[in-house]
Image (tube, rainbow, N blue to C red; front, side):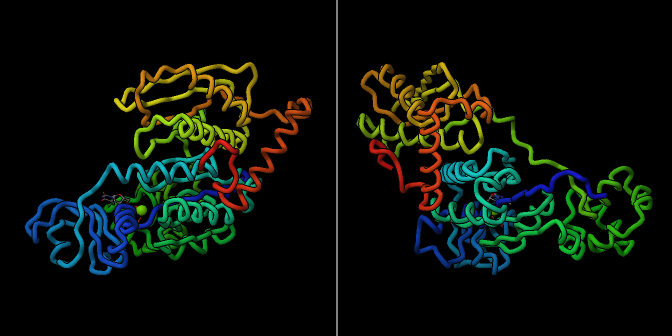
Length: 393
Ligand code: TTP
Ligand code: MG
């Protein structure tokens, strides 16, 4: 029943104890302690629930969605903190920003969880395993947080795998080990199987995914209708669901909110240069060129402005993007106001045609080589090691 298509490499990334880990990072005295994020416990009289808690708190039996009063009873000495949604969303953006450095094929699932199709990332980062190691390392380096990753040929198995060695886990399931991995697992791990179906199966002494896989498919159809076929397929490792990006990639962009509103021209331009580098880097990784460039500016009064321009020829070169962005910026009238946020977006994308690059002018070829070299150095020494003179980061 295995399909003949190319083997897929799907990663499932899930941050560890996300809200609690951010608080522990920002308040080092909380490290190693039970920390519970959620409603106010009011000394055990509080209503509301636990959002999440640190792994230290989990040892006391506390978990997400538990009444906060119960969490208080289980561990009154834990540190209870309210949910700081704004802060966690900001970190979530940073995480997604890192993930998009590796592939555009991302299915966001939640604030701290996503599927990545890294089948095509081979040629950029090495094996899928190496890509996952790099993703984990980059998240750690740039956010000082840990993620757990599952890598497998199907979405369901990648998701199960990411949960298996939390925190800071990395579990790889290869295609030839898929059934060895899947069959000993409890049937509750199977996607889409409700509580009722689960107890119906248990009454037939079907307790593991392997038990289910070995059932006669027609018996399953008798019990579950066409869902029976679906469950049987999943139990046999057949799961063709693709990683679904929100839309096909129509634009590639990046933006920065300054830590405080600024009007220093040099700093603003340096940030724009940095963003152009980042965007052109991604265009090249994804194999795109862009013809439309858009500058976004949010002023201190929160009013947001965009200014766009179309290039004569599609590009993925930093200096071409920056030249255009600088022009747009110089023409923009800030009315003496400070700047809160700047962004660079490219759209009107076309994929790089390999024949095209054969006939490109030498100067362009040379530029491409320089870019490739810079990319290589960045890969080896990290993203911050090489930037042009005007870029401060
Ligand atoms: P999860 O990824 O489910 O949990 P987690 O990251 O805290 O821990 P784990 O290491 O097991 O992945 O959810 C991500 C965040 O979403 C979590 O930090 C808090 C929030 N959340 C809630 O607010 N309510 C909930 O019921 C759950 C499950 C999560
Ligand atoms: Mg998580």
